[in-house]
Image 1 (cartoon, one colour):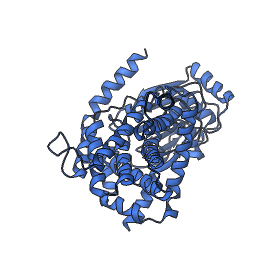
Image 2 (image 1 turned 135 degrees about the horizontal axis):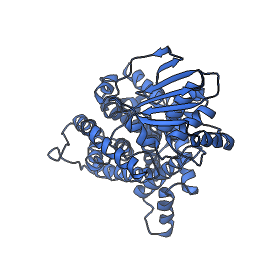
Image 3 (image 1 turned 60 degrees about the vertical axis):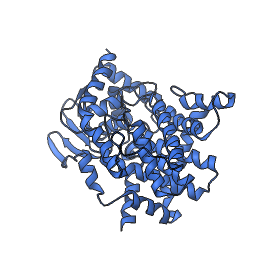
Image 4 (image 1 turned 120 degrees about the vertical axis):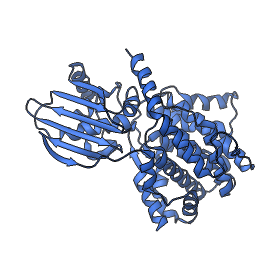
Length: 426
């Protein structure tokens, strides 16, 4: 039964996404609202939580030259196909982009910060001369929790509590031991979804290595190995490969990724350092797939406590997950895998999330490097002791402390960060 529960977690949390998930979720809400009106739209009103706003302010939109919450909402209304979920902006044309720009320039889109404690909350109201539709997405990037049409409520679900404590309750019986047992026992044919994550995320990372996207973090690191300035070792290759995918994604690449727990960057960061290690270590495809599965599951396990959005960067969780999986490839020892998680969390715990943007690729690189470093130390029997900081003897308690750090400091930190980001642009 536990194995089936774990498999269902994989199916739920590994989702193909095109573009950064916060702006895409705004576009999804807008596109959904458009379905409930029949006249030309005269205005769009967007209210979103601070965490959503900071991730949607300046990140690239797939295939588009323009960015912004107002633009994304208009684009979703004009061109989005809500039936495609997080891939709804696939195939948007230049003409549709120009229509969205014109709509925004006409002053028909307003954006405001939503009140309330939910970290993932989007409300889009679409109006015509005589109609109005409201759509709310909350708790999850695709969870449409409210729909009203001309004042008539069509959907009204209880808003999911996205707090870490409620997320923990989703799978309270699962432990790291359960996840490890699963990846050693699950038949390989049941890991097709994980294999797909390797294929999709490898493709966008290779695209980022080959072409100029964003800050070119991955490409630049990779090119320096050819010049002899950086060594072509596991840490550098892991950084370059993973960061290249983030470079492409944050710059608006039209290539999809396999997201993990609602984050495409996290999907890349749990997958690609492990793939890089598998290549460098020369392990079998089966061993690699089991390791990537472990990385995905550990990230889901930790994010169930951490929350989908936080003041802390979610790639830190991905780094810890990847580190344990790399340790599995180096030294199949559960004690050492736990040590790798301890080492990584003790290293990168203070990294804040200041929104989705080109610079995210540098954070992906940093956490990928930390994942390799922590795995090497753990494989050699080295672990940050429980006398240090928030590290506990029990790795699960360390994870809880780390998640508490994010949860209890998020409100103030998010408020300060958002104020800095918004006021800077005036």
